[in-house]
Length: 118
Ligand code: SF4
Ligand code: SF4
Image (cartoon, rainbow, N blue to C red; front, side):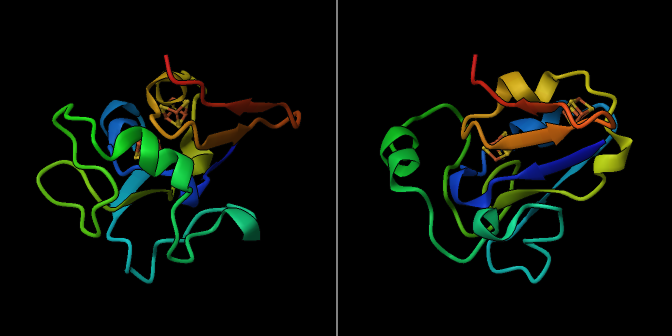
């Protein structure tokens, strides 16, 4: 299994980090040198700018998670990196919890699964 996060759309909500049973995701500060330590294609890597549609949708939402903050602290903020995609068991928990609809999983038969926020 391969897993990556489309970084420009990641809100930093940390839902994926919270629900994944096999610790595929780690939350990183946006300035961290490890912010692109997954297999996201070049155009989906973190280069310092966030998709403005996502900012408009989530920046004012008060749901107990901080959105688009530089740092991960106290359970949210920063952005998610799929550091251990090979451990994924395709339970799909992250796919329905991802606010940014920005998680992409590819199985060993090249089937692709994308997050759709419930
Ligand atoms: S689908 Fe994979 S990456 Fe997502 S929560 Fe389940 S095991 Fe973790
Ligand atoms: S659930 Fe989606 S938007 Fe939230 S931190 Fe994970 S990848 Fe980013």
